[in-house]
Amino acid sequence: MDGYYSPSLPKSTFAMIRYMSSFQAIVLSIIEGITEFLPVSSTGHLILASKLLHIQPTEFTKSFEIFIQLGAIMAVATLYGRVLLINRKLWLPLISAFIPTAIVGFTFYPLIKTYLLESTTITTISLFVGGFVLIFFERIGFKKDKTLTWQNAIIIGLCQSVSIIPGVSRAAATIVGGLAIGLPRKEAVEFSFLLALPTMAAASGLDLIKSAGNFTQSELWILVVGFIGAWVVAHVTIKAFLRFIKTNTFTSFGVYRILLALIFWLLYR
Image (cartoon, rainbow, N blue to C red; front, side):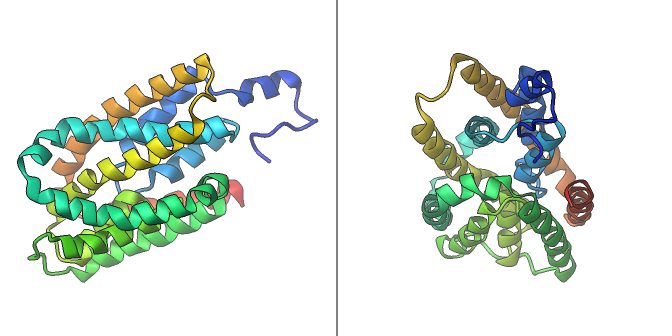
């Protein structure tokens, strides 16, 4: 299996792929920052990149992939923190949308980290199917005249809970949920950004609590590098994404997901 020690590999090769380097951490943090808030699955990209970089799937690398998400949501906090403080009407919808995901996430946390995060098969299928779902929802063209309430926010939260499956994409699930209830494209995207705050903070916090005290000094440095890298890149990506959707649909992301799934299949069949 790729990333694990094989007797046929020289010991020097095993030493190279066993530990994550600062360079690998930077590459993964850039990928996370770009893909976290786009409907393309950051987890799917990280799994593929880790395979290509020969990063061994260990407890630390799994924690790293979760922790850099915390760096990405710092971009949302810096860009939208003032909005949340001023517009308290958003609080109830955010809480309502977060509850379904929290229940599913806490319940299935061991399954997610132990099995799902390593499955390229599940990731490939999710990317492929999700691509067609995005295209389908764009083609349907729901009437975009609904306002966000705590009741329809629960529907978005239920959609987000599906994203525990690698390759689904938290952003894609919440955006599709927003479009399904009739939110305008920009409002659906921005609510997806805001919902990332409690969702990803809870996921990262849970993992850090369970892993606290198990990191070495060099691993802590890798976590810091990944955190900062994801934060900076995500900040730029969010602004670019909002400009993009003003004149474009999500169809191109759907096509991209399908092509990425085919790459997964060709590499790991």
